[in-house]
Length: 223
Image 1 (tube, rainbow, N blue to C red):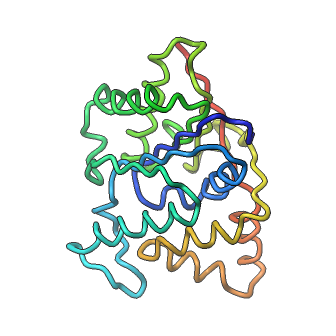
Image 2: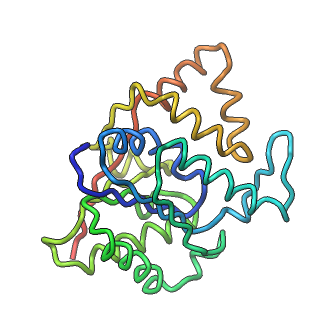
């Protein structure tokens, strides 16, 4: 899992990296694997404004950009790409145009592994558009040149349709860094962090789930 030459992470929003993959990314970096994170938007239209609110609709894009910078720093990412798309508009972009953007990143970086969302099982329209673009860009490559894809799926029907994730990463020892990543996205993660800090069996089980293992589905392009 950790023997990669270059990892390319592609998500649409600041904080998409925090929940399910930040421990894995920190582990890659700790093992000397270069990680590039392409974040497509700045989450300008996020519903959460902090809890209690400390952002406004006008200030939220600037706040979320700073949070993204802090999160990347906490993970250890030095190659952070802000791709300049607008939140909640990716579904209206042409698939071919989004795939072109992903293709240019692949051409430049030659990743051995791409981490992104799983098409059809990632809930938000921006997530789905991103997933479709990643798969289309990889589909364009000759089979021998295609990087591996480890994708995140979390819709309600994921387990029924896809079964259990086939890539499980032990992130024990990286929980503190993941905690810092979640804390960096303060405008979005306050309620979650408060619930995780509770002294209850449910909170303990949730901490075990979030801070010990991260799960992915390997994805093979079908021509």
